[in-house]
Image (cartoon, rainbow, N blue to C red; front, side, top):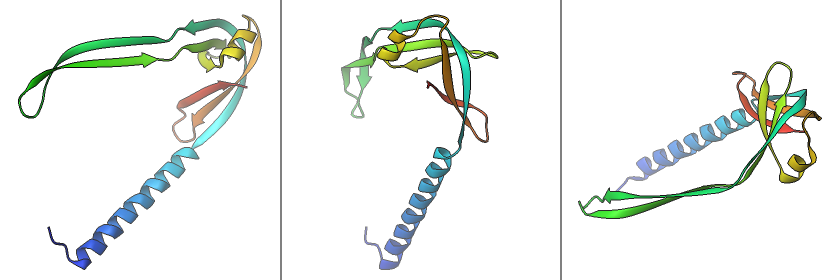
Amino acid sequence: MNQSPTSTGTARRRIATAAAIACGVLFCVSCSFRHEEHAGKVVEKVYTPSSTQTGTGVAVGSGGKAGVVTITSSEPEKWTVIVDIGNEVIAVGTSAERWASLNKGDTVTVDIALGKHTGWRWNATLK
């Protein structure tokens, strides 16, 4: 397809505008959190080992030819601390070292990232 210089310039401006809007949205989302710190007590510690699952099936390609498909998914091991922060009990992921150093009943500080406009919990970490 042969494009005129005018249509090429218009396309470039549209791409630049879309990129600027995307950057603005990402900036707003990344700055749209407020953090709250809560003191809590460790209620439980949960270790989840890594796992791998494999499945097979049949897929049909665009040419109508069928073939065998193998799908593998895996999850890394996880160390989770269940913390009672007074008004609720939440699960917080942590490092293996921190998980091993905690015991039931220990007092911890939880940093919770909440959406500024929605109030949704996005993340919780141990301080």
